[in-house]
Image (cartoon, rainbow, N blue to C red; front, side, top):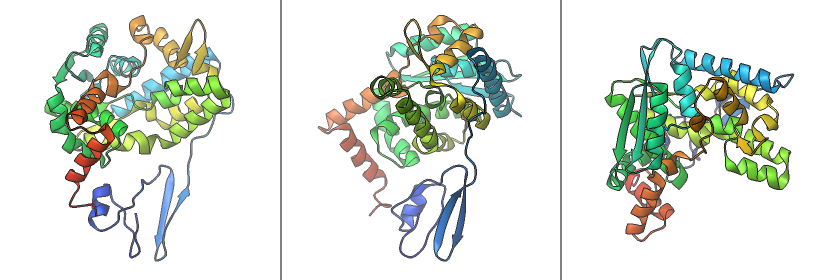
Length: 334
């Protein structure tokens, strides 16, 4: 960030706010920064490139499995044990299944509010994977208690970011309590392989190019929209978050795939088609392979809990979070 007097770089926004720089922005990946007395400029020095020849379906399944296993293996090098943030859904189940193939002890960590249907799905998936399953359940009051810490970490009060950050914060906290230094998670899979419903909506309304453009834009923004938030809450607990789907070779492979390998109109509409096909080849059970996507903030009940807390104060969720945010950062923001 910069102001009229100077510019500065920091790993956290709050450090810049403290010295009077209110407007900050994230440093983009693949860029070089050059600073002098006039200020600073950034140059793009590396960006993922599409492969010369898009693969066929069979080739894509084989390559995807190879790249994912390679990515997971690299991210577990030097470890004796690792934790996986586990929802029981497709992405975290794939990571857990492939991680089992590496000579490292793999444990599953599931966090949720009480009485959520997704917890039962997670237990069933963990039973199939035959991996140690650690379940931690929370109440609405726990969301209220953890909120100031989460806002301090993510330095943002946007409702979606906050509701996603809370379960990741809990997962990292529990991983640390259990003695794990590294947490694997499935972030990035939806952007790379067409997992969000809005891609399908764009496809239906505006055609293939609109859906592809949205996916590429989301991939370009993953670091700022998702990864930065998630790394912050994990770092708070001295846990290193590692994301197998965010490997550079895997990203180049994913952006090279034709759209029909991501969103397929077969017997019914399938998002993340090639990921599901790979999962079938791995012989994961159908209830995992074809489980409908449910975003973490809804699956864990955190979104509903935040709305309930806001309603208690007679405020919309956004206003409730903004008020909590300014209370946390009152000494930093003018």
